Image (cartoon, rainbow, N blue to C red; front, side):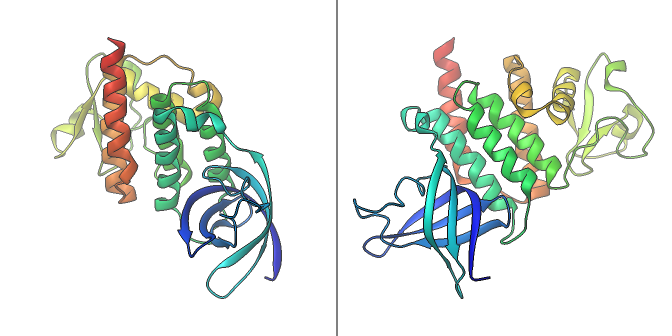
Length: 258
């Protein structure tokens, strides 16, 4: 490929040698790529600002045999507010780790790039827990794991959640809601409040910046967290390291707000 340009978010960064860093970048044009930023740890490096974790930057790179090399970089959004808030920083880490775990190298996914940027931008003002739940839901849909909410996932007949005043049955394995009859014949189903299912539907349909503004009762947030954790584990086969720490921080934050 030679020399090329890319717009990217820095997903991961690790120290390499005395002054270099190896970066995992999620680019708009090429998807996830690995690249080395040489000399970037030196105080005089012009690349330092562009390669900070979660930074949204424009890069010039040179393709190599095993790793590409960052030759130029210009930061567009640095998200400095993350450094002053552990909960928001951990949420950003979790979202970035999900993207890293669920995507392959050199697979262009512009929708994932824009989704990650939306999450990072919304973290400045919105509830981090809601941002995480919306991000999980939309990422699953973009990657082909969209849950079926408008029809019974088992026999495909139309069944509106709004018509059900009690619990709604959901199959993580099958990937959607079940009518009461099918739920009786299906093992390992999850019982959800109708509000929780309608929230999932809203997350899928609304623009990211609008979806994260919804006020969600604590019990429905808990149901969403549990459901999406199971869904990601089953369909995405991922268990992000940042998730446990994030949930610990969220529990402490909830307890302190009581």
